[in-house]
Image (cartoon, rainbow, N blue to C red; front, side, top):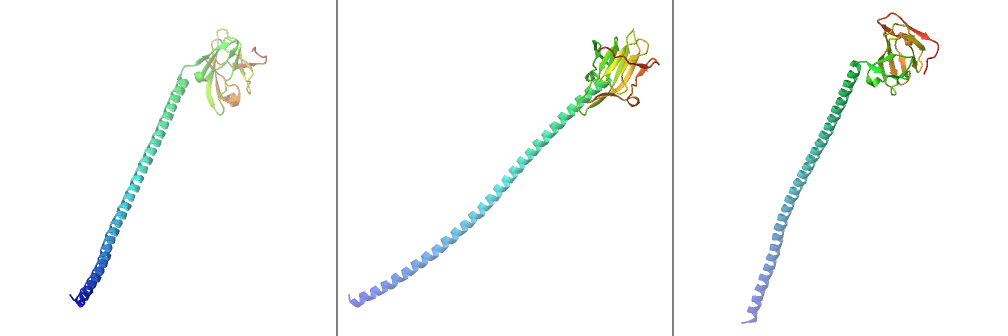
Length: 225
């Protein structure tokens, strides 16, 4: 084998190796591009799916928040309804008590040691039986409250008993019912936080006799307490 032949072999081998190197480089470049393209496509798909998932999650969170708000509003509305029902029950109960108070029989005010204290919680019609000289202590109501009511003064079988109102009112003094025994008188009054004032004839004593034409006669001497 000659040297020239070996040189030719090595020249061919060098060319072949150069071609293989070029081919390998091109293969690496092409396959790398293919892999990068596939990875980019997968990344875009992943980003798209992630965006959709985030959007769905946001929608679900909004729906949950809306449901919670609806539940809170429904609970608040139910509480308002319950409060309104309770207020209506209270108004109904108060109306029933007031109707009973207005339509019930007159309340007999006890006279103890010559003193009678009407109790307006027992009704708007109060009866004081004058079996002795009597001081009538007029009731007062809480601030900014007022109530119209009727005081019925009734003579016993003796008659001619004195009475007075405490606190003293304009036009009121010590009085005697100048009427037959067992006669009755009506006095229409209004009670408020300042005491009781007469609503008849501009604040003067406006007793209306029942079954008699006599009038109430004021007495100047003080009656016993």
